[in-house]
Amino acid sequence: MKRESVWMLLCLFFMLSGCAKTSFPPIADSLSVVISLDVKAETVTFLNAKNGGKIARWNIDQPFQGGVLSPDGRTLFLYGRDLDGVYRYDLATGKLLGEWKIGSGIVSAAPSPDGRTWFFGDSTHHAVRVVSRDGKEIARLSVGRSPMTLLVNRAGTRLYVIDFQDERTWIIDVDRRRVIRSFAVPKFALGGVVRERQEELWVGGHGSGSRVETNIHVYSLQDGRLLRTIAAPVMPVDFVETGRGVFVLSHGSNTVYQFSLDGKKLASASVGANPFAMEAAFGRLYIASYDSDEIIVVDEATLRPLARWKTGDGPLQLFIREGRTCANEPF
Image (cartoon, rainbow, N blue to C red; front, top):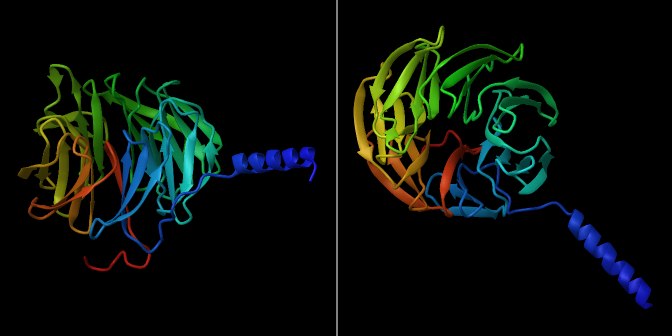
């Protein structure tokens, strides 16, 4: 074979290799999994939600800072302030589906309940970017400088944007794609839960330096009035509501609190080392312990620890994806 032909074949090989999409070990639809976003290691760890067995670990090798799971549990989205877009991965195949090139500065994300519309908090343009399910931007709504918490109500008609720096929360009418109201919240507000039956918005907070947040602030969904505060020291940053009440994770004190549905403290327990994220499923709480690189599994009824499962370095965010054929099977 002539030397020129060899070089042409080699060039063709490398061109095709460069065009090949990233692929990782697939995650079967039948499996119920805990998904850990390990930001220090730039990995995503998939663990069996029943026994903690490692199913796969994806080495993303990109500086992602957060992610979101599609409502149907099929697609994982990863974003980061310094990334140029949002990366979409198919769990069943492990393949990179593509990138939504919406630019850098993304610090939060949330889907509509039907997955047709996606909301991204943009710290570069101080906006919420509204994106269709095919990746096209359909609206850009001005909010604060750091829209780090996005909460969607059950019907998908309202989006609550809690800003970390600007001491405000914005309420967006999703159908009309416009801001309809805003109200004051403490600086460094972070995390929250929409409680529609009680017509309340619970807002957490981090604080900074000597000014740390020790309370949950409860606001009226109707007019944004501060209704009361609930002590949950220190730095309540994540919230989960189940039939047993509202669980609040305070990462400054390594504590998980349980409150009744009317807001009375029922119990608390120490958990993890610098925990940032919490999810609930199957009668358990799954808590990401950032400094110890593990998930702490806690019994929802008693707050007793059940297990500790290793993740990659720096688990910052968690998702639960229930298996399609075994979601209703008892653990």
